[in-house]
Length: 131
Image (cartoon, rainbow, N blue to C red):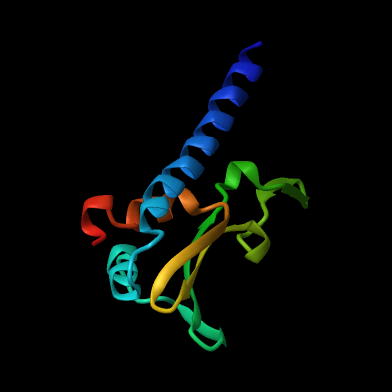
């Protein structure tokens, strides 16, 4: 039963982080491009103009960290049990992508995806900073 309670807390936390990013980004719909960039807290990491008057702006957040040794597999080597050394396989990489579509200089829609979006929510400006 304790496992299910913990799972419920983790799932609720995941939903709260998604809601947190949405709560920060939804008020930006209708903002001008300069106001959008200012509210996002930094210039976009990538931009594209797929059609005249339409711009796609992308922001990325990345976080990498090693899994603690006690969670890595161990090997039996000549009578001694030793942890397997850290390798790229022992690294976790969390990312978040936020993409905005700007039409005629006005932010019209957004999408986001990734595991690190809770961290991204803290970087996006408060609604009072938008306009």
